[in-house]
Each structure stands twice: as structure tokens, then as C-alpha cells.
Length: 300
Image (cartoon, rainbow, N blue to C red):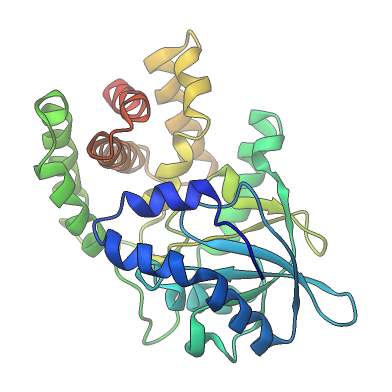
């Protein structure tokens, strides 16, 4: 099929350190998509737009008209780990895998069709957070024996490379974030399967369940790390309110109490993840995003 990859995907892949490999994958994407469709015996309808920042999703259908979605991601995104997490959840709180037989051939995932245009972001804030917490409760389970997932300690150790090279304007926050990470990983804690990239936009409306999560970047560790990304959801709205720092701290406490997570650990991971994301945004030239993230982290 002939198509242009969504610009969000093109821009995001261009920010990665291994740009050459990702650019090569983008160039091969139409051919890869055709082969993946043929292997699974499904027909493409259209590209899901605006799409994600790390993969291409094609809305497809079987010969009998049954809808599905075909997801293609570059090798660096480790789609094998996504498959392993989705298979372990078995559709409980997450999108269901329809066919994993050919995954090793091309890394593509054939998934049940959700409603990509309807996420939790379409709900009022209070209702969205309530549904998000309910979804997370379903995902936090023991990982499978002999799992292939990295740990929170491993992932955040690699992320510290970005923080060590933070520019002067973010230096103090970067040092604080790394100190918090050292404290939080000093003692072994929970070892649960985590979504890794959970936020309101990653929870879509479905048919067999009202809300199901998609797009995990799975790892193993404590719940506070997973919840930390949700804390800063709808960040521009939070910054625009008059509540400021007090409102941000109330949000941390409310989410921690709702899911029985330690408040201080959630605050620590929220700071770390916001500063790490802000530092990456600075490095990529996305100054507006970086300023919002670093301002939010400073409030906590």
C-alpha cells in the first residue's frame, strides 16, 4: 500500500540517537507493511492518524470484515517486549493480541481494534483519573517467570546519561533528580510488571471493555514509577491553573492514596521522570515542552 508515515512519527524518530537506523526503517515501511499484511491475511483500510511517536498503526480487517489493527515499530522500540507484556496481561486491562505467530518474522503486532480517536483525555479530568487508576490496578501483576524485561533501576541508570549532560539551566534539577533516583533504587522493592509509559492518551475506548491500555514500554519494578507519568498528565492545563505548586502536590497525594502508593516515592519518581523528559526535550530543541516539564518538577 502507498502511504506517508505520520509526521509525529517522523519527527520523534529523528530525535533518537540511532537516527540512521530509524530512517532506514522509515524508508522500508511501506514494503514492511505490505509483507506484514500478507502474512496475516488482513487488508489495510487506512493509517491511524495522527498516530503515535514510536510506531505506525494501520487499521485493517479480515476477509470476513472483522476489524483489527496492525502495529509496526522499529527494532529499537523492542516490540518483542511489548508482545510479551500484552500476552501476559491476556487482554485484562490491555488491548488483546490476535496473532503472534508471525511476530518473530517482522516484529509487527496484530491487535484487536479499539477506538483510537477516543482516549481518557476525552473525559473530564476527575473521571479520567478514576478510570486510569482502575486500569493500572489490572496491569500491576507479577511478571512471568524468566521474563525479558529490564528493571526500573536499569532503565533509569541509562536515562541518567541524559541528565549528566543537562545544560546549565537544568543542572540543579538534574542533580536533584539523580540524587532522588539513587535513593529510590538503593533498596530492592516491588517487582511488578509495569506499563512503563502509562498516561491518559494510552487508554482507549474498546468494545469488550470500556477502557483498555495500549502501547506499553514494559519493565519490572515498583508501582510508584509507573504512576509518576500519570501525575503530570494534561500538563499545560496544570501549569495554567492558579493552584501551581500546591495543586501539583495535591495531585501527587491524591493519586498515591487512590492506589495505596507511598507519597514520597511517588513524588521522587515524578520529579525524576519530569526532569529526564525535560532534559531530552531541551536536547531535541523542544524548548516549550522542556520549560513546562522543568517548571512542573520544580514545584514538587
